[in-house]
Image: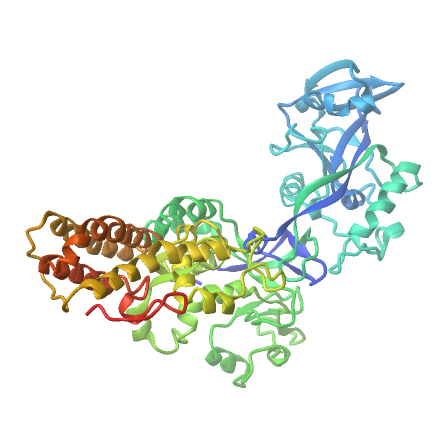
Length: 617
């Protein structure tokens, strides 16, 4: 890639233990990923080691909603500038943030004996006894470290750190030189390094870990102060629906942070509808973009075209970009690039003078969103074919999807376009809202929470459904609740008024009208002027992809025709006034020509829900 090339890394990512693969930030921000969940929350005391100080053997209180991470604890974090308190209760001493004393009134008392207060900086560097003995003596571990993300909004003001299971935690321990330990396997089960819980899925291990802390099991060194339940939104896998965990894994990344600022700049060239998405939902996402994990530990998918030496003593990495390159190095031209066939391509490592190591393809496949972002050029096999066509058609003029794709398809298109071509992937984008059922939930076939489409077509006509969707807030980024009443309201507001106006003209005009705009009558001049304004405003709205705004103008125009012009001109039609007949004929004809992209005109009928059909030309 031109910028931000693929690179391997060992990082903490959201991980699906059921599917055995990490997920990208894009996948964990999709709709319906965060669901309400109840987890156990525990407050555990860890004994400080500070000989000669009143902090020695005091219990530093940490709070966590993931008790299963406690066996992997390697550090504790405080904020250097936060005020902490040393509290004496029933012969025991506790350390926690002063701002959190009230939250622990049940255990420490309404007015606890505060021996003294001090800044978090005084705790830095102190060692402590970990909550479990599995990794006692781990290199540089079990010390109090500084972390800016520590707050006093909840918990105790001290943070338990298991770096293998927390992205921010790993940053802190990496800086402190603490090696990461990952005693949880790809299935989300503890391994043999944590004997009492080996083979247990981490969420299933929670009650056993809490019970061991409570009863003071030999391997449990921490002191359980509080056990409660905690309700919170928690990310779930969008594929299988299981709760995710954070886990340190090897993954391949696109280094988005290298060209993030350029992505922000190129976004200014895109026309967004609604306009606030540019610097709001999409712009903010770009400003905070992180490196993109593009590898998945799955069998099905597009294999990552990277071959590595199987002997670390003779490292080599080869990245392939074409069949010709594969044929050059492996001597065969693959006919199937999927697993397992592509994995059969091996060759001796050219950098190994012993000739013993082998170049083998890495086992991962690409994130499916990488393929989605590649669509503009991959669909025409560029750059291997159709180069002239691609250069003439790229960027795309227009795309449309729901606004959640600001973190999905829109984003991956923009990432790859910036990295490869240094220009946007699309010129204009409509980011619509979500279609909801009559129960307020996302419309779903499984829930059947929407009117039967065939019944709507039979009763109200397809035009009614079409108008209802286009005139709704959904095309301005809002959500739309689909109800039978809402669909019928569209018929009342626009379809019937236009049809009734045409029907009135056909019923009372003694002759066929002609198109002209020279009537001197003030009502005719007014309605003709309104019609001319309709043409200009509707054209401008459609050119700007403001579909809902265009519908508003048609609806207002229909109101003007029926409840203002026709109502005040009835006597003229009954008298056969040529100016009135020709003016209304002209207005209807122009309306029929300008509005059909939103609403079929009266001349083609109004669907099953409206009587008759006719012509206005």
